[in-house]
Every structure is written in structure tokens, then in C-alpha cells.
Image 1: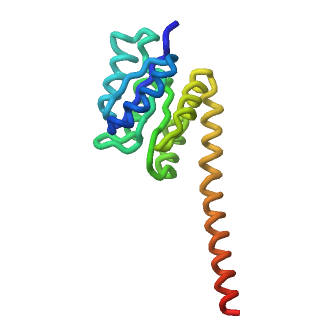
Image 2 (image 1 turned 180 degrees about the vertical axis):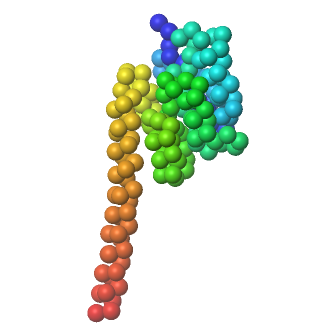
Image 3 (image 1 turned 180 degrees about the horizontal axis):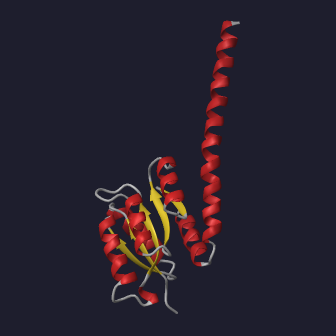
Length: 173
């Protein structure tokens, strides 16, 4: 049986190597790496549109770092969708997600996010879910999380401010 092909795109070699090794260790997937958005597009163009376009050679899923020099992850994601909009995208980031999440989830249909440092088991579960036909469930789960989490964080901030004000009031009284 042919193993699905996953492309890991990250400008940090150690991170890309670790992620690729984690995926390869499952023995369920083939893994390629790219160190830039431009290199990723070249690989996808060759494999999904070029001479090697037999299904087993196509990139099916991309784990894509958001912040990279040159073409960033959002720009790369948009170009990937132009080449082949059937490729699944999981964004990988160590940074604040809100602005990037909104751009990519709504505008370009990234299906999920993984935050560095990531839990290897969760990454593999996301990949397994994607190849098990659960990509819409994954997208909805992350959509719910990212809409709810900012509200939860704001509520915690308000609660902390209220406690602080109550303590100040007690000092005054």
C-alpha cells in the first residue's frame, strides 16, 4: 500500500528534522522537507502538477511554518491552494495566532494549527485524523477553540483586574 506524502516546511532545520522524524517514525507516511515557501511550492508543483503527478507521488498534506524569511507561511499557503486546493494544510507556529489564524483559516482554509513546542502525539493525531477523512471535524474543532479562547483569556484578565481592585478597595477601607 502506498503511504501518503507529507511535506514539512520550516526554515529552522532542527524543527523540520524533528517534525519529519516524528512523522516518519509512525511508518504510515512518506515525508519530504522544504526550508522555505519557495522550495515548498517547487516540490508541490513538480509532484502535483508535473511529470510525477501519479497519485502516490502527490503531496497530500503540508505542515507549514507561518513565520519564515522571504515568502511567509500565509503567502505560501495561498500559492499552494492555487496549485492544488485539495492539499491539507496544518500551520505550525511559535507566535501569537490570532491575526494569522484569521487570515489563513478563513481566507485560505488551513485546517488546523500546531503551536511550537508541539506535542508529538497531537501532531500525529491531527495527521491521522486528516487521512481518516476527519479534516472537517478538525477544522471545526480548531475554529471553535480559536473563537472561544480569546474570550476566555479576556475573561481571566477581567477577573484578575476585579480581584486587584477589590484588594485596593480593602486597603482604602
